[in-house]
Every structure is written in C-alpha cells, then in structure tokens.
Image 1 (cartoon, rainbow, N blue to C red):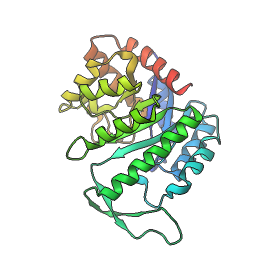
Image 2: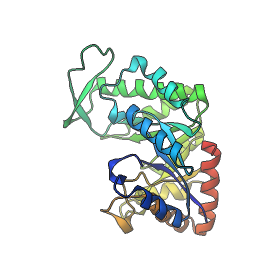
Image 3: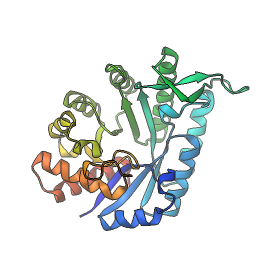
Length: 285
C-alpha cells in the first residue's frame, strides 16, 4: 500500500530535531511521497532545498494570505515566477487563497517598499476592507503565475463570520478560467465541495475529518467521488483524533485514509490507490 501526503510543512521548526526519523516513520507507514508547501518567499526557498535533497519530497512555492506582511505586490509575480522556475522539484503554486477568519493589525509599512503593508502579529483584529482587497490581489497573482507555468494551485480558504471568503474565492477562480488545483484542508460543506469540484478542483482532507465535531466535513467527503479527493496532513498542525494534541507528521496521513475508507465503506487499499493516482496526475509527479 502506498500513500502520498499532499500537503505538509516539513520546513517548519517543529521537525528540526528529528527530521530523518519523521521521514523514516512516513516510509514505514507506506507514505511514498510528500509535498512540502511554501508559505512565504523565504520558506518557499527552504522547501525547494528540501525537495532537492530528498528524492521523495516535492515542493510548492507561494505566499499564504496570513503571511503577506511586508510583501511587495508590485514585484511578487516576477519573484514567484523566478522561484517557481528554479527547480524541477517544484510541482505547484501556493499555499494561496483567502483567510477572512482574523488578521493581524496593520502597522506602518517599511520605508521604501511600495505596495507593502507590515502586519503586527502580536495584535489580531477583524478583517478590514483593505486587507481583504490585498488578499484578493495576492491570490490573483498566484493564479496568474500558475496559469503561466501550467502548475496546479494549492488553495487555502477560511471563512470569518460568514461565507464571504468561500464565495469570493469561488468567483475569483471561476472568473480566472483556471481549473487546475486543490482546495486544501477542506472545512466547508458538501454543497461547497461539489461547487469547487465543478470548477475542476480536487478537495483535500486533513485529520480534521476524524474529529468528532466534523460531521459536516465527513458529509462532504461522502458526497464526492474518490477521484476528486486528496489526502493531506497539513503537519505539524491538525493531528488526527488518535494523536490530537501532538505534533502532526506525514505518517499520520494513514489515519485520514482510514477515515475516508470508513466514510465510503470501501477498503483502505482502494483509498490509497486512487488518492495516490489523483495526486500524481494533478501534480505530475
């Protein structure tokens, strides 16, 4: 049995002390490949280095909407394009998208950097119209780069008090005409799952699908064809119920696969085989 963790953050400090041991456990659990996801320009460079040094790791490059502090939107397209062309191990663009849950408060931008807004991570407040607009601009830049290179998008969507983020992301993707990518860490309902699949996107499920309170997410998984599902950990975050409260890691993607098999009433082996095919076809690995 072979599995792929289609969304991990292996460059994070959480793995610095036992990185090779984590990879060994993943291999022993049947995890064939891991896609390590960039969240800003610096970290994207780090995941590319990891991918270059480990044959079973691939990388994506991008700027997460919560990491846009100090980002120069006027130069980001060229910066991302240059980075994305730097290695054959880069298989996607992102993590990108919209996060309207909360946002750090704005502080004065660095002098001399046009189009940048610095964010104060010590103070979190509700989303402002300005920050929503910047997130939309950031998202569109990633879409443009992905279209230019023909690479899939790794899309993050988190709503605030309503469904504005999901609605806006859907309309942006629909208007773009680009239909290659995955809605990562899916936490919406079955109707939204079907709408994004209707655009051509895959749906990524994490350990959240194993949580007792996640019935709506399980219903979304149940409503989809197995051909539209990817498995992911989003490690070091969101450990499955069995390991909840601990650091998540790629080997735990087996728990996600087991839950999908249970939801659909099929074998683990069938889930592993089809979701592995799905990842390899989408990311061309």
